[in-house]
Length: 417
Image (cartoon, helix red, strand yellow):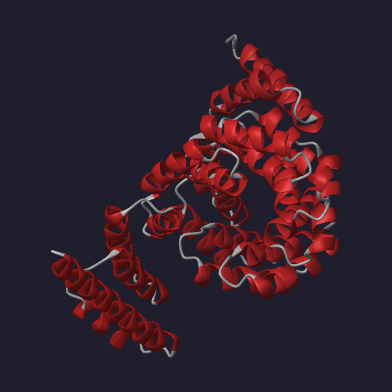
């Protein structure tokens, strides 16, 4: 009996030594980058073990084959529970976009080790990724309590409130982040964007300027600054920012479009035209370059070119095109085609019932063109009903014409209401 036990023990020792020798060879091959040979050696092992599967998983992970990595890590955990292997498995599930499985692993580990703040932070970010704000908020509130100086905890908490559309708590969390780390660019961008949406212009300016001091080429902050300049009609100040943005953001057409608008507004028509021609070829679904090319041609009294561009804009555009129809109507008016002008002013007004200028022109040209003054009179009444307080000069003219038309019809024996 003793001899049998001794033989068995010797067999186990020899087997373990042989496996250790095999793993030494595998490790050596892997260190030298001979991962294919290392995998071949691992496949030769007749009795797979925790270690053989783990080493195989590590090799596949090193060559970004995450599917096979997961396959072998799952086998690893069949042999025994191992925290390191579990965490690696969770990370590779994330790489394969299997976030729910990662969350399960993190939750299991944290149930046994609730003081692991690093793991809790990762779990909170996964909750945000899966749009589970209630769970994320709870995690980050707990983390903020445990480490009140960590700016990232406050930032992630703000993102949680953002998912819940809890604007006030979101902004408070972001401000808390900024107070802990004044160079936290992501939170500065969030604050600038949030205050911009709230139309709190002073606060927007403060955070936009702070952000640009940290990163002068940040695209989002540059756009906010440019929009501010444009809104305040500080066109010349917007130009350097737009030229810089055009050089660093090649994919977007924003800078080209805004450069065109800025040049147009300072009457640099040649430069504006150059930008809008570039834009119409770069984004064939955008009808606005045709609109502005129409405006430029109209200013240059090139009515044929203006008419072609406005017509293209009305054809390509899908949303409200009253500006385009108004421009087209103006070209017809200038070329002595009043009936077409009336038709297009009417279309402009129907596209946008708030366009008081279109209604005014429709009324006035109808009044001038038709012998039946009731047509213009009806439009004048509609103008007074809707836009009496819009423009004093227009309103005075309309009221005067209403009186004159009513008087003329009264003298003919007809009362107009």
